Length: 350
Image (cartoon, rainbow, N blue to C red):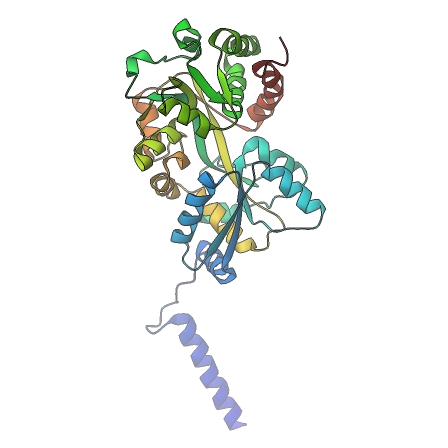
């Protein structure tokens, strides 16, 4: 009996020491953020789904640098949201997070395929108000700010239009290029500001008067500008700066205003195979501390929203640009107009 009593005293003393620490003070408990990311480290894996390698590659590097011990595997698919839906219907749940735009995640949200972030998790990561949308399933990530890009060896800033109607000047006839998703989404979004009648008329004039060259992706358009085949390209500020700084391409951009910023977001799948890794990484990506880190990794990952501590935001403020930022409601309206503009630009309707 005495032995058991002594053992109980020793065990109690050990537990007390473990809780209080060596100096009789309470040992600090790991924060919710630390606990979640430690669980992510133990899972050891994160499966990322996004559109193209240009986006996936820097994100893989970034997440592995920020979370040592976490192996990030990327899958790219230009129809990733449709892929996620099809796989879920077949009972396959292979991806942890998706990086896409708001319109792309809406079908996933409507099918209840996305995990919700808890209020205490948002608080632990200090996610800014308004950064979690769609019932706290979707976290704002970075922006694509539409602009006009050009080869600085051939054109001066004063030669390039500073409003969208300037593209209709006869001097740009047969000299303007853009990929179909960027151009059509841009016109549709501007149509929410300037009116649908403006958008449809602008699309027809780009097709008939300017004779815009429509290409399937921005890489082709950029190469045409650098080879001197075209003078102007419909592009993004971040992408233009990124190509100049990382690859020393002689690209420049003009502050066209008003303009539009599409909103890229990050979501965690409800049936993610590595749920803690999904939540830890997605939440971190939406923090203010992550914004300048992501921009340094790849400039096109920059956040342009007010309050962001990024070079892109400083450029916007320096040029006093008026930007229309995408939200859920405008994304839905943009999709509707997008469907009517594509046939016009492709010459399928008058």
